[in-house]
Length: 294
Image (tube, rainbow, N blue to C red; front, side, top):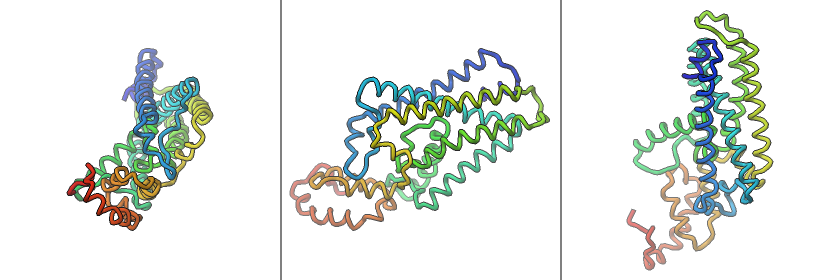
């Protein structure tokens, strides 16, 4: 709304611009901090096994770790402002354009999830509640991914690595497209307008910052985790890899599979059943904390 108001005013008021920049920086810092904390968490890194590894791309050395955080911040900052600026440009041109842009983008996301059999959220629960929760969580995850570039959303159980990366590329390309629509508009919607040269300067500046930050980020992260940003795994394929990658004897970790929605474990029910029946007698005798009636 701040960016839209600034576009309507047609001014370059420094206070208004500083307010927008501060808002973008706050969102970017929060997103980068969440990603940093999740990725460096010992408990999250302990979830990695020989088949799957999501957490751990942040380097352990001090200087590369600092560079990684700065790159995450500037990358997210550029993405957030670019996405916001795109929406404001469309809104200033024609409100219907913005509606088509956002609704179409969200509909495409849901369609991809449905086609890939990956719509239902991975957490198990009551059928109706689980479905309603799925619709809400998928919607919220898409919004967070689009406007904060939150890297946790690259997890296969959330949006997925490939979708996350394509979302960033789409935001960059759409910024130029939205700029073209704004510059070509005749201003019939009323209000003052920013000069075309200034619009392209802002878009080019944000794009340049995004590309430079992305290159630095890719240069400093741990190489073995780069594939997580382009992974095509669904929640089901990820859960299967995770379950089969847990070593023998770690029954407590394997038991977490029962918290996964049945649709997310259907493809490897045989492996789950084999592990369960092979250890049932021992579970009955030892009564581990996770071996409840449920």
